[in-house]
Structures are given as C-alpha cells and as structure tokens.
Image (cartoon, rainbow, N blue to C red):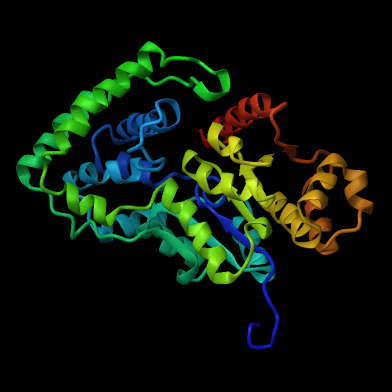
Length: 361
C-alpha cells in the first residue's frame, strides 16, 4: 500500500478479555493450578485497582495482577506446555468474535494489545486470523521462571493468608467516597503485609519485573508507538477496552477525538471511553468502527443519536451489507449504546457493571 502511494488512515486496537473472549484465562489458570486460585486472583485484582485508582500510588499499574500471580502459578507446578494447552482448550469466544475481527482486519490495520500471557494470545491469534506481529502481550516462559522450594512454600502460606479478604463493589471515583471502606482498607493492608513486603525478599522478583512487564501504562505506550509507526493520528484511532488496564490507552484516544469504545466495561473502562456498548455480540463494534472510518467521531455520535431500527435501515452507511447483517441479528431490539459524558457517566457505569456481571457469571 505504501509503495503504491496509499496511506492507511484509520487503525483498530482492542484488548482480548470480554470483547474477544468471555473467559479470563489468567484467573482460570489460577483456579486450575493454585489452591483457591480463583479467589486469590480476585483479591489481588481488587488490590491492583484500589492501589491505583483509589489510592493513587505512583508504583501502581492497572493489570499488574497478571504479574503478581505468576509466582503462585509457578509454585503450583505450572509449565509452559500445560499453560498453552489449558488456554487453547478452555478459551470461550464472544459470539461472532472471530467473524468480527476478520472483517475489521480486512478494512483497516487491526491489533490486539493485552497484558495477558502469550500462552493465551498466540492460539487466540490463530483462531481470529490476527498475525503474531499485530499482537502485543506478555512474552515470557513459566519454565524459565525459577522459584526455590522455600519460596514456593512461603508463597502457599501467603496465598492462604489473603484469600479470605472480603471483596466489595465500591466504586470510589464515581461515588466520590473520600476514604476506603473498612473492608477495602483491610484488604490493602493485608496484601501489603502478606504479599508485597514478603515477596520483595524473594530471589525471583527482579526476573519477574523484567519478564512480565506489560500492564495498563505499557498498553498506552503501545498505542503511541503504533500511531508513530503507522503514521496514523491518535484522532484516527479506534480502541476497544473492557478492563481497568485499558483506561490509560482509551483515555489517550478519547482525548484526541478518536473512538474509544467500552465494551461491557468496568468502571474505569467506561471512564476512559466516549462510547459504551452493552451487549454480548461484538458486531456492534464493527458497525460503529465503519461509521468512524467513513465519517469520524461526529458521524458516530449522530448514529447513536438516531439509534433505532428504522433509522439504521434507511441510513447511508459505509457498508450496507454489514448493516443488514447487524439488523438481521437484532430484529426487535438493538443493543444498548451510549455516548459517554459527565452527565451520564455514573448511570452508564452502573449499567455496564451490572450487565458485565450478568454475562460473565
């Protein structure tokens, strides 16, 4: 394309969890290889969110939970082969995710940016038809991660200490609570004492920080790097996210008048977006992405303002065949789609969190 003098004008970047896959493979790996591992992941994930978005610690980085659980997985006996086979056999795609991703990839450069492990992203890329070169994730080896027997024993003790922490759904930024509630405060103190301080003395920590380094901030940097390499403006970028770790990258795109879509997002995914979708089927993302590709963010807003079956049936659009397929899948009621602004942020956040909880149970 470049040699022929054609420049790519729009790019598409997405995360994997919730938009492409229903399963959280890191949590699933914890549940499979660590005693009470699912609960352990939930506690550390909550700690991850609280230390960054509620307490504002400089050292916090959304998505770091995927690094925090690696020692527990290693102590549980995981290997690269076991992780790869487990992820490949248990990954559950969202409805039509493979068709949607292949379609978008045929229209514009498409990338997956994730803090997930390569053991999950590589087979997922094969299913979706996304080249490995277009996937950013944590490239590391469980087999090369060395955890001594004394450290493994200590890690099992740490896990048993923190899994009983009580989890809450308090949304501090939206409700503007001035302090952590007593349960979240106790959780942070417990993980600080039982995990952060004790693991700092273990030999594998430096290797862990070096090898498992991609989280929310790095995902934002990857968007900046893609814009530089592809010579595509941030305002011509589409990004789709669902988790707290997607906020930094989504915030960059939204502030540049690009299209930042929260797809069944958590609180901070919604906060980083200018458009929120509540539905299981990613085809809605394809429809809005083509509208953005054709007319920019104002055209997307206009479509949402006229978000009804009759209007979409007669509306001029970039791909009438895609629109017809979309309408055929929703003959009676369209998915919920919102323009996100300060006036409706709280309501959309609550609706998105409730819908997300329902479809992921």
